[in-house]
Length: 358
Image 1 (spheres, helix red, strand yellow):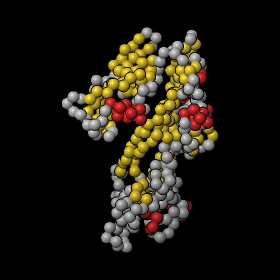
Image 2 (cartoon, one colour; image 1 turned 90 degrees about the horizontal axis):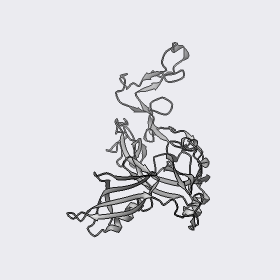
Image 3 (cartoon, one colour; image 1 turned 180 degrees about the vertical axis):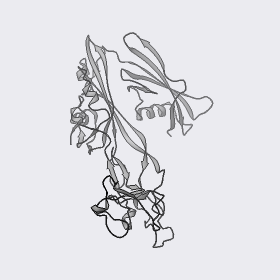
Image 4 (cartoon, helix red, strand yellow; image 1 turned 90 degrees about the vertical axis):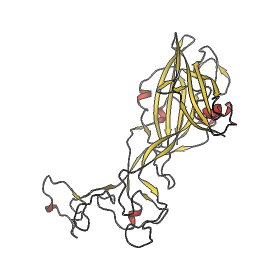
């Protein structure tokens, strides 16, 4: 018995804005469950599991408000359907004078001692599938001619002629999303700009604080697997002093290991094309090689890939990583080129102690 679908309701969030930027929100969700025996606790537990539970900050539509916390969840079953519910989440600011628990769980009046707010969920990103396992062998008739690829081979997604699909397949790739909020006495724009949209270039692990105070298990994060997807700082007053809630959101993905084809936050692209490299020393297509005298000044060092009739191939074909058509048994594995699109950051310099050197 569980939730099978959740979406923000068409009524959208209702806001009551009060003096001192003390906003109060009411956010409805439409929810479907898979059993008429499910009750309100099923809804509450599910919301907690996706980072929308009691005590979490507001994330609804395009709105994010780290200054408020979820104070109540009111699930109501649709009287016309036992499988459909409406859950209304209410958010309001924390009492600035109210003591908060420190890392040991004891009440503290010092915001710098307050424990971090930690949320984790799973989200999905759609990506192009360049490599996959073929369930059926090629050729399907068991012959010895043509593109050779036994069933269960991890390699390029292509047809039985070895021609790459265009457009390629796509899939949803899961990733862990971790959001951590902590208190600082200062506002530093660099502490936001230096991390947002960047990935780790060094090996990381969870800090001792995350393991000791929040029960994180030991975990090593390889380079290019952690991306800062968001960074913000919100000011608040406590006993006549100003403090800032810094919130960082990280997307954590796996490196490729033979069972996972996604390689962290690197972009892996299948080497393919309609043209081959035609530089000095490359094949000339007639059984010889291209010499420097064959190349005039200003001549492009590429040439169309020809078929056996010396006609330009009309389809994208596999390349060998050296600018030439890929042939033979290596075709089944393909050649992939990895790209790093995101700039690097050292997450050990975060103002919140989330990571340690791996």
